Amino acid sequence: TSPYSFQGLGREGLNYLVQAAKEQDLLCVTEVIDAPSLELVVDEIDIIQIGARNMQNFELLKMAGKINKPIILKRGLSATIEEWLLAAEYILSAGNPQVILCERGIRTYEPSTRNTLDLSAVGVAKELSHLPVIVDPSHAAGRRDLIASLSKAAIACGADGLLIEMHPNPAEAVSDGAQSLHPEQFIQLAGELGVVAESVKRIFACGETKDEESLESLRNQIDDIDQTIIECLAARMQIVKKVADQKRLDRVKDTAREREVLQRLINLGNELELPSELVKKIYPVIFEVAVQFQIKRKLVKEKDLDLSLISHLGSK
Image 1 (cartoon, helix red, strand yellow):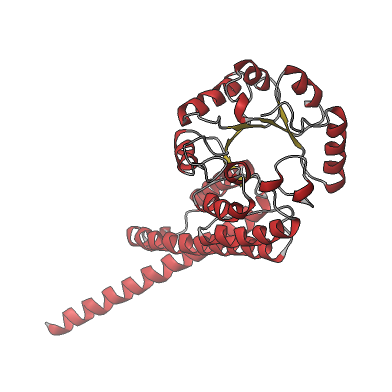
Image 2: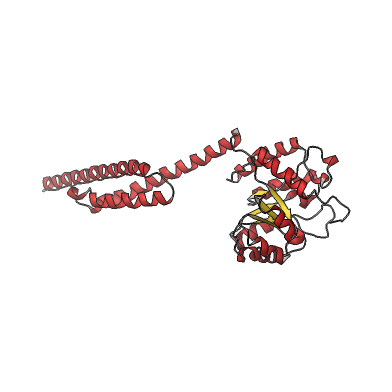
Protein backbone atom coordinates (compact mmCIF):
# COMPACT_ATOMS: atom_id res chain seq x y z
CA THR A 1 0.00 0.00 0.00
CA SER A 2 2.72 2.48 0.98
CA PRO A 3 5.77 3.12 -1.24
CA TYR A 4 7.82 3.31 1.97
CA SER A 5 6.91 -0.17 3.24
CA PHE A 6 8.84 -3.35 2.46
CA GLN A 7 8.53 -4.08 -1.27
CA GLY A 8 10.02 -7.58 -1.43
CA LEU A 9 13.40 -8.85 -2.61
CA GLY A 10 12.63 -9.41 -6.29
CA ARG A 11 14.74 -12.10 -7.99
CA GLU A 12 16.67 -12.79 -4.77
CA GLY A 13 13.44 -13.41 -2.86
CA LEU A 14 12.15 -15.66 -5.64
CA ASN A 15 15.29 -17.80 -5.37
CA TYR A 16 14.79 -18.19 -1.60
CA LEU A 17 11.14 -19.12 -2.11
CA VAL A 18 11.85 -21.73 -4.77
CA GLN A 19 14.71 -23.24 -2.74
CA ALA A 20 12.59 -23.48 0.43
CA ALA A 21 9.70 -25.10 -1.46
CA LYS A 22 12.07 -27.62 -3.02
CA GLU A 23 13.69 -28.54 0.30
CA GLN A 24 10.32 -29.01 2.04
CA ASP A 25 8.61 -30.66 -0.95
CA LEU A 26 5.91 -27.98 -1.05
CA LEU A 27 4.18 -26.07 -3.83
CA CYS A 28 5.41 -22.53 -4.36
CA VAL A 29 3.02 -19.54 -4.47
CA THR A 30 3.77 -15.87 -5.07
CA GLU A 31 1.95 -12.73 -6.12
CA VAL A 32 2.39 -10.86 -9.40
CA ILE A 33 1.45 -7.24 -10.03
CA ASP A 34 2.22 -6.68 -13.71
CA ALA A 35 3.56 -8.28 -16.90
CA PRO A 36 7.29 -8.15 -15.90
CA SER A 37 6.66 -9.81 -12.53
CA LEU A 38 4.53 -12.49 -14.21
CA GLU A 39 7.29 -13.20 -16.72
CA LEU A 40 9.84 -13.35 -13.88
CA VAL A 41 8.05 -16.07 -11.91
CA VAL A 42 5.98 -18.03 -14.44
CA ASP A 43 8.57 -20.76 -15.08
CA GLU A 44 9.52 -21.29 -11.42
CA ILE A 45 6.34 -20.85 -9.38
CA ASP A 46 3.59 -23.48 -9.07
CA ILE A 47 0.66 -21.16 -8.26
CA ILE A 48 0.26 -17.50 -9.20
CA GLN A 49 -1.58 -15.08 -6.92
CA ILE A 50 -3.29 -11.89 -8.09
CA GLY A 51 -3.86 -9.54 -5.17
CA ALA A 52 -6.95 -7.60 -4.17
CA ARG A 53 -5.66 -4.34 -5.65
CA ASN A 54 -5.17 -6.01 -9.03
CA MET A 55 -8.50 -7.85 -9.15
CA GLN A 56 -9.67 -5.56 -11.94
CA ASN A 57 -6.32 -5.21 -13.70
CA PHE A 58 -7.90 -6.73 -16.78
CA GLU A 59 -4.75 -6.87 -18.91
CA LEU A 60 -2.97 -8.79 -16.13
CA LEU A 61 -5.98 -11.12 -15.83
CA LYS A 62 -5.88 -11.83 -19.57
CA MET A 63 -2.17 -12.65 -19.37
CA ALA A 64 -2.82 -14.97 -16.43
CA GLY A 65 -5.44 -16.67 -18.57
CA LYS A 66 -2.80 -17.64 -21.11
CA ILE A 67 -0.58 -19.61 -18.73
CA ASN A 68 -1.20 -23.19 -17.65
CA LYS A 69 -0.94 -22.70 -13.89
CA PRO A 70 -3.46 -22.27 -11.06
CA ILE A 71 -4.35 -18.66 -10.32
CA ILE A 72 -5.45 -17.45 -6.87
CA LEU A 73 -7.69 -14.42 -7.46
CA LYS A 74 -8.24 -12.32 -4.35
CA ARG A 75 -11.45 -10.35 -3.99
CA GLY A 76 -10.99 -6.59 -4.37
CA LEU A 77 -11.15 -4.27 -1.38
CA SER A 78 -14.70 -3.11 -2.16
CA ALA A 79 -15.66 -5.51 -4.93
CA THR A 80 -19.09 -7.07 -5.14
CA ILE A 81 -19.28 -10.82 -5.60
CA GLU A 82 -20.47 -10.28 -9.17
CA GLU A 83 -17.44 -8.10 -9.95
CA TRP A 84 -15.17 -10.72 -8.41
CA LEU A 85 -16.67 -13.51 -10.51
CA LEU A 86 -16.50 -11.39 -13.68
CA ALA A 87 -12.81 -10.75 -12.97
CA ALA A 88 -12.37 -14.54 -12.78
CA GLU A 89 -14.11 -14.80 -16.15
CA TYR A 90 -11.30 -12.77 -17.73
CA ILE A 91 -8.88 -15.54 -16.76
CA LEU A 92 -11.26 -18.36 -17.67
CA SER A 93 -12.24 -16.90 -21.04
CA ALA A 94 -8.57 -16.47 -21.97
CA GLY A 95 -8.12 -20.24 -21.67
CA ASN A 96 -7.04 -20.99 -18.11
CA PRO A 97 -9.66 -22.99 -16.14
CA GLN A 98 -7.52 -23.22 -12.97
CA VAL A 99 -8.91 -20.29 -10.99
CA ILE A 100 -9.11 -20.30 -7.18
CA LEU A 101 -11.21 -17.54 -5.61
CA CYS A 102 -9.93 -16.02 -2.36
CA GLU A 103 -12.11 -14.06 0.09
CA ARG A 104 -9.78 -11.81 2.11
CA GLY A 105 -12.17 -9.32 3.66
CA ILE A 106 -13.72 -6.15 2.27
CA ARG A 107 -13.55 -2.47 3.22
CA THR A 108 -16.36 -1.37 5.54
CA TYR A 109 -16.90 1.33 8.16
CA GLU A 110 -15.83 -1.04 10.96
CA PRO A 111 -12.40 0.01 12.35
CA SER A 112 -11.94 -2.89 14.80
CA THR A 113 -10.33 -5.11 12.17
CA ARG A 114 -8.18 -4.46 9.12
CA ASN A 115 -11.04 -5.58 6.86
CA THR A 116 -14.42 -7.25 7.36
CA LEU A 117 -14.38 -10.94 6.49
CA ASP A 118 -17.45 -11.67 4.34
CA LEU A 119 -18.03 -15.37 4.96
CA SER A 120 -21.39 -15.21 3.19
CA ALA A 121 -19.36 -14.68 0.01
CA VAL A 122 -18.01 -18.23 0.30
CA GLY A 123 -21.46 -19.78 0.00
CA VAL A 124 -22.65 -17.35 -2.67
CA ALA A 125 -19.53 -17.76 -4.83
CA LYS A 126 -19.73 -21.56 -4.60
CA GLU A 127 -23.41 -21.43 -5.53
CA LEU A 128 -22.87 -19.14 -8.52
CA SER A 129 -19.71 -20.80 -9.85
CA HIS A 130 -17.89 -24.12 -10.01
CA LEU A 131 -14.66 -22.59 -8.70
CA PRO A 132 -12.98 -23.49 -5.39
CA VAL A 133 -13.11 -20.74 -2.76
CA ILE A 134 -10.44 -20.22 -0.12
CA VAL A 135 -10.31 -17.69 2.73
CA ASP A 136 -7.50 -15.44 3.99
CA PRO A 137 -8.34 -14.71 7.65
CA SER A 138 -4.96 -13.04 8.24
CA HIS A 139 -5.57 -10.10 5.89
CA ALA A 140 -9.21 -9.94 6.91
CA ALA A 141 -8.53 -9.53 10.62
CA GLY A 142 -5.13 -7.86 10.65
CA ARG A 143 -4.88 -9.26 14.21
CA ARG A 144 -3.50 -12.64 15.19
CA ASP A 145 -5.95 -13.04 18.11
CA LEU A 146 -8.89 -13.37 15.68
CA ILE A 147 -7.32 -15.68 13.12
CA ALA A 148 -8.23 -18.95 14.86
CA SER A 149 -11.94 -18.16 15.21
CA LEU A 150 -12.24 -16.80 11.67
CA SER A 151 -10.41 -19.84 10.27
CA LYS A 152 -12.77 -22.24 12.04
CA ALA A 153 -15.81 -20.32 10.82
CA ALA A 154 -14.46 -20.38 7.25
CA ILE A 155 -14.00 -24.16 7.30
CA ALA A 156 -17.46 -24.67 8.82
CA CYS A 157 -19.16 -22.54 6.17
CA GLY A 158 -17.60 -24.41 3.25
CA ALA A 159 -14.25 -22.79 2.39
CA ASP A 160 -12.00 -25.10 0.37
CA GLY A 161 -8.80 -23.84 1.95
CA LEU A 162 -7.12 -21.15 4.04
CA LEU A 163 -4.25 -18.69 3.64
CA ILE A 164 -2.74 -18.15 7.10
CA GLU A 165 0.34 -16.03 7.76
CA MET A 166 3.02 -17.38 10.09
CA HIS A 167 6.42 -16.03 11.16
CA PRO A 168 9.10 -17.41 13.53
CA ASN A 169 9.26 -13.97 15.19
CA PRO A 170 6.27 -11.78 14.21
CA ALA A 171 7.62 -8.80 16.18
CA GLU A 172 10.57 -8.63 13.76
CA ALA A 173 8.59 -9.27 10.56
CA VAL A 174 9.17 -6.59 7.90
CA SER A 175 5.48 -6.74 6.95
CA ASP A 176 2.19 -8.04 8.40
CA GLY A 177 3.73 -9.01 11.74
CA ALA A 178 0.59 -8.13 13.70
CA GLN A 179 -1.43 -10.69 11.76
CA SER A 180 1.18 -13.46 11.68
CA LEU A 181 0.87 -16.50 13.95
CA HIS A 182 3.79 -17.93 15.89
CA PRO A 183 4.69 -21.45 14.62
CA GLU A 184 3.34 -23.13 17.77
CA GLN A 185 0.05 -21.22 17.37
CA PHE A 186 -0.21 -22.42 13.78
CA ILE A 187 0.40 -26.05 14.77
CA GLN A 188 -2.26 -25.86 17.47
CA LEU A 189 -4.74 -24.21 15.08
CA ALA A 190 -4.15 -26.89 12.43
CA GLY A 191 -5.20 -29.57 14.93
CA GLU A 192 -8.28 -27.61 15.99
CA LEU A 193 -9.31 -27.06 12.37
CA GLY A 194 -9.23 -30.81 11.82
CA VAL A 195 -11.80 -31.23 14.61
CA VAL A 196 -14.04 -28.49 13.18
CA ALA A 197 -13.84 -29.98 9.69
CA GLU A 198 -14.72 -33.44 10.97
CA SER A 199 -17.74 -32.06 12.85
CA VAL A 200 -19.22 -30.83 9.56
CA LYS A 201 -18.28 -34.00 7.64
CA ARG A 202 -15.24 -32.47 5.93
CA ILE A 203 -11.55 -33.35 5.80
CA PHE A 204 -8.92 -30.74 6.70
CA ALA A 205 -5.47 -31.57 5.33
CA CYS A 206 -2.55 -29.55 6.69
CA GLY A 207 0.73 -30.55 5.07
CA GLU A 208 1.27 -34.31 5.06
CA THR A 209 -1.75 -36.49 5.76
CA LYS A 210 0.25 -39.13 7.61
CA ASP A 211 -0.46 -37.93 11.14
CA GLU A 212 -2.90 -39.80 13.38
CA GLU A 213 -5.71 -37.29 13.03
CA SER A 214 -5.65 -37.31 9.24
CA LEU A 215 -5.38 -41.10 9.20
CA GLU A 216 -8.41 -41.32 11.49
CA SER A 217 -10.34 -38.99 9.19
CA LEU A 218 -9.47 -41.11 6.17
CA ARG A 219 -10.55 -44.25 8.01
CA ASN A 220 -13.84 -42.59 8.88
CA GLN A 221 -14.33 -41.84 5.20
CA ILE A 222 -13.70 -45.49 4.34
CA ASP A 223 -16.16 -46.58 7.05
CA ASP A 224 -18.83 -44.32 5.55
CA ILE A 225 -18.22 -45.76 2.09
CA ASP A 226 -18.33 -49.34 3.42
CA GLN A 227 -21.66 -48.59 5.08
CA THR A 228 -22.97 -47.21 1.78
CA ILE A 229 -21.82 -50.37 -0.04
CA ILE A 230 -23.69 -52.60 2.44
CA GLU A 231 -26.81 -50.44 2.20
CA CYS A 232 -26.66 -50.63 -1.61
CA LEU A 233 -26.26 -54.43 -1.51
CA ALA A 234 -29.26 -54.67 0.82
CA ALA A 235 -31.30 -52.50 -1.55
CA ARG A 236 -30.18 -54.72 -4.45
CA MET A 237 -31.39 -57.83 -2.62
CA GLN A 238 -34.79 -56.24 -2.07
CA ILE A 239 -35.12 -55.83 -5.84
CA VAL A 240 -33.88 -59.41 -6.32
CA LYS A 241 -36.89 -60.55 -4.25
CA LYS A 242 -39.24 -58.85 -6.70
CA VAL A 243 -37.38 -60.36 -9.66
CA ALA A 244 -37.69 -63.83 -8.10
CA ASP A 245 -41.46 -63.45 -7.89
CA GLN A 246 -41.62 -62.86 -11.64
CA LYS A 247 -39.37 -65.74 -12.79
CA ARG A 248 -40.02 -69.42 -13.32
CA LEU A 249 -37.83 -71.72 -11.22
CA ASP A 250 -36.07 -73.14 -14.29
CA ARG A 251 -35.20 -69.63 -15.52
CA VAL A 252 -33.74 -68.08 -12.39
CA LYS A 253 -30.15 -68.02 -13.69
CA ASP A 254 -29.72 -65.88 -16.82
CA THR A 255 -26.11 -66.41 -17.96
CA ALA A 256 -26.35 -64.05 -20.95
CA ARG A 257 -27.66 -61.25 -18.74
CA GLU A 258 -24.87 -61.82 -16.19
CA ARG A 259 -22.21 -61.63 -18.92
CA GLU A 260 -23.70 -58.41 -20.27
CA VAL A 261 -23.89 -56.76 -16.84
CA LEU A 262 -20.38 -57.88 -15.87
CA GLN A 263 -18.85 -56.45 -19.06
CA ARG A 264 -20.68 -53.16 -18.57
CA LEU A 265 -19.39 -52.92 -15.00
CA ILE A 266 -15.83 -53.79 -16.05
CA ASN A 267 -15.98 -50.96 -18.63
CA LEU A 268 -17.30 -48.57 -15.99
CA GLY A 269 -14.56 -49.67 -13.59
CA ASN A 270 -11.92 -48.97 -16.23
CA GLU A 271 -13.27 -45.44 -16.67
CA LEU A 272 -13.06 -44.93 -12.90
CA GLU A 273 -9.54 -46.45 -12.72
CA LEU A 274 -10.81 -49.50 -10.83
CA PRO A 275 -8.90 -52.76 -11.51
CA SER A 276 -10.99 -55.05 -13.73
CA GLU A 277 -9.86 -58.04 -11.63
CA LEU A 278 -11.66 -56.58 -8.64
CA VAL A 279 -14.94 -56.31 -10.56
CA LYS A 280 -14.46 -59.83 -11.98
CA LYS A 281 -14.04 -61.26 -8.47
CA ILE A 282 -16.82 -59.36 -6.71
CA TYR A 283 -19.72 -59.48 -9.12
CA PRO A 284 -19.85 -63.23 -9.90
CA VAL A 285 -20.23 -63.74 -6.12
CA ILE A 286 -23.04 -61.18 -6.01
CA PHE A 287 -24.73 -62.85 -8.99
CA GLU A 288 -24.46 -66.32 -7.42
CA VAL A 289 -25.83 -65.18 -4.06
CA ALA A 290 -28.73 -63.51 -5.86
CA VAL A 291 -29.48 -66.68 -7.85
CA GLN A 292 -29.38 -68.91 -4.76
CA PHE A 293 -31.61 -66.46 -2.94
CA GLN A 294 -34.12 -66.50 -5.80
CA ILE A 295 -34.13 -70.33 -5.97
CA LYS A 296 -34.67 -70.60 -2.22
CA ARG A 297 -37.47 -68.03 -2.36
CA LYS A 298 -39.15 -69.84 -5.28
CA LEU A 299 -38.94 -73.23 -3.50
CA VAL A 300 -40.40 -71.81 -0.29
CA LYS A 301 -43.23 -70.17 -2.21
CA GLU A 302 -44.01 -73.38 -4.13
CA LYS A 303 -43.91 -75.40 -0.90
CA ASP A 304 -46.30 -72.93 0.72
CA LEU A 305 -48.54 -73.21 -2.34
CA ASP A 306 -48.54 -77.04 -2.14
CA LEU A 307 -49.39 -76.94 1.56
CA SER A 308 -52.15 -74.48 0.83
CA LEU A 309 -53.60 -76.78 -1.85
CA ILE A 310 -53.43 -79.84 0.42
CA SER A 311 -55.12 -77.88 3.17
CA HIS A 312 -57.78 -76.70 0.76
CA LEU A 313 -58.40 -80.23 -0.61
CA GLY A 314 -58.48 -81.65 2.91
CA SER A 315 -61.17 -79.21 3.91
CA LYS A 316 -63.40 -80.55 1.14
